[in-house]
Amino acid sequence: MNINVTGGSLEQNEIDAYIEYGKNKYPERQITAMDINIDNDFVDLKFYFRPVKFERIRRITGYLVGTTDRFNDAKKAEVQQRVKHSLS
Image 1 (cartoon, rainbow, N blue to C red):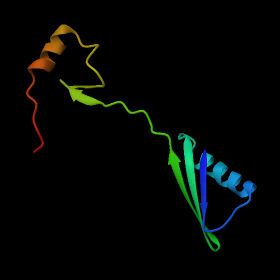
Image 2 (cartoon, rainbow, N blue to C red):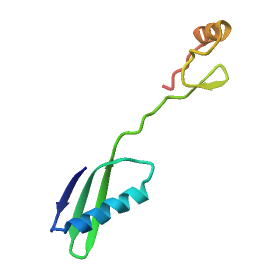
Image 3 (cartoon, rainbow, N blue to C red):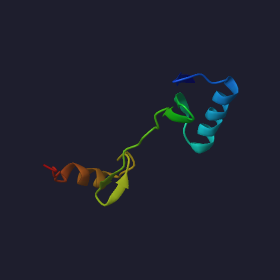
Image 4 (cartoon, helix red, strand yellow):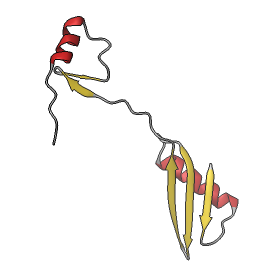
């Protein structure tokens, strides 16, 4: 994990405490880097996370699907014959 401290210096145990704080605050995310900005008695933290895998879900022929690979031949034909509307 890349840690960047600006505006002053911190001891390693303080940095470790901020890392632990981030892990507890965002348990479902993986922190890859952190900026710590010291401003007198205040500390600003900025966390950077590993990108989350994303699967596109679409409504096709009345079903919410990610892919059409499990559609039967009739549904695949319906997908090919549908009229696509643009948002412009």
